[in-house]
Image (tube, rainbow, N blue to C red; front, side, top):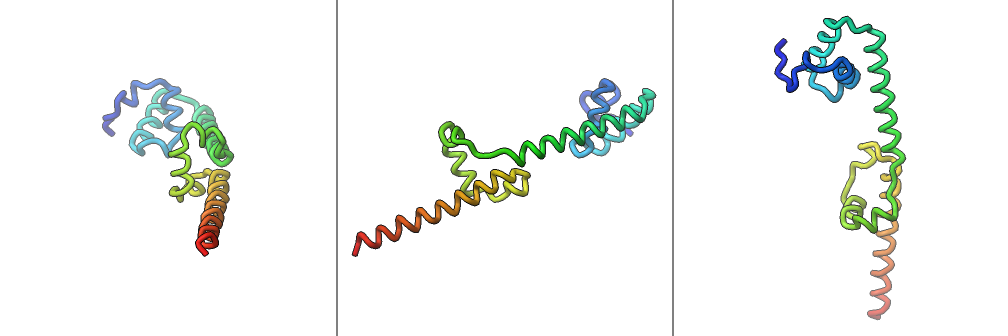
Length: 129
């Protein structure tokens, strides 16, 4: 197999190779095969490789949990109001992307916005009469 990566897989440190093997979703399958082969050539213990995989899984789970617990803050509306409101109104993939709490807040915001719009509309109709 040809190593066309920059830097080449063979020139990377053992820790770099363990990181590649531990995160197969983030790497090209060819890079993964080369990293496994190079670890084998370096006589790296399979327990060390398994530990790298377990560490990567734990890190991914921690990231997923962090995303799920991320919420909108008042500072979001103050510091970046346009992007926050745009995300609340027009983004449909928050739950799918793992942002569970943000998706719940978005749903509540949209319901509140509809109620406010209807309230203003009905008040304007009453004032015209």
